[in-house]
Amino acid sequence: MTDCTSLRLPAPAKLNLMLHITGRRADGYHNLQTIFQFLEMSDELEFQRRNDSELTLTPEIPGVPTESNLIIRAARLLQARFQQQFPDAQLPGADIQLDKRLPMGGGLGGGSSDAATTLLALNKLWNIGLSLDELAAMGLQLGADVPVFVRGEAAFAEGVGEQLTPLPELPEPWFVVICPAAHVETARIFKHEQLTRNTPVISIRTALEHGGKNDCQPVVSMLYPEVAKALTDLQRFSHARMTGTGACVFASFNSEAEAISAFEQVSAEHSAFVAKGVNRSPTHRLLFRPS
Ligand SMILES: C[C@](O)(CO)[C@H](O)COP(=O)(O)OP(=O)(O)OC[C@H]1O[C@@H](n2ccc(N)nc2=O)[C@H](O)[C@@H]1O
Ligand SMILES: Nc1ncnc2c1ncn2[C@@H]1O[C@H](COP(=O)(O)OP(=O)(O)OP(=O)(O)O)[C@@H](O)[C@H]1O
Image (cartoon, rainbow, N blue to C red):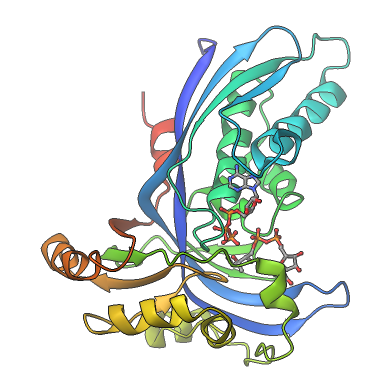
């Protein structure tokens, strides 16, 4: 295999097609059942290997100090692992460029996806050779949504989101996604006393046959009127739901033309986009394409 010194990769958005909260654990985290699907809508990252151990990220995201950016945190975790594995080797670094396209705090998982793409890219650029299992376990330290992006397959998720059963056969519709101008803090929703936390556990089959709801949606709609309005407006065209802990809401369509027609009608009032749902992450499609 030839060594490469630079890589450009997407970090796609995800949707939670349903999200049930089935209990609260002793550590305060919640057990979930959710279906993840990826969107053909991504941040773009470019990685250049450095021969010293510096990590740089440009541009900085306003309001997110570089050291707390999930991209840099992912890179540091991998550097620590490199050091364990190759104690006598020069620690490598990277110059990372981020083209941020996904709205933040929208429930589209952009930060988690950036972290996953960083783990996949630097594992390759630094020739560490970690398996997807190892990278997913590392990703879980950064956030509950990172493992599904590392594995790159649409999935039914349980636990806090880390127990994944791939769903390669999900329909891949077109989605209209509305991004209301609200930044929903995930922890605030999970702490809310009116959050439903006792939805009965269901089988994957039931989830696939009957769909499901998003247990966070009632609380978020109550706290953020912009989200409630987006749901009402999108509901005119097709069943509208919220992704993750919001604020983005989505509806599916059988064809691109139908999705564009709905988009054209909501976009006068809302910030929105059209994207196809895909069961294999665009990152994996590029990174693991047959040579
Ligand atoms: C709701 C989802 O978006 C569904 O995909 C994710 O589970 C959230 O994942 P995430 O954004 O990666 O969240 P994390 O950064 O791990 O957690 C943020 C905060 O949300 C709460 N949290 C998160 C996930 C979970 N299963 N239970 C929780 O209670 C915790 O208070 C945590 O401090
Ligand atoms: N690379 C990054 N991109 C976006 N946000 C980041 C990044 N690194 C750290 N963050 C922080 O993480 C927060 C959540 O960002 P993200 O875009 O993942 O939210 P989200 O779409 O609501 O995700 P989720 O569905 O996982 O809750 C941001 O508000 C920001 O403070």
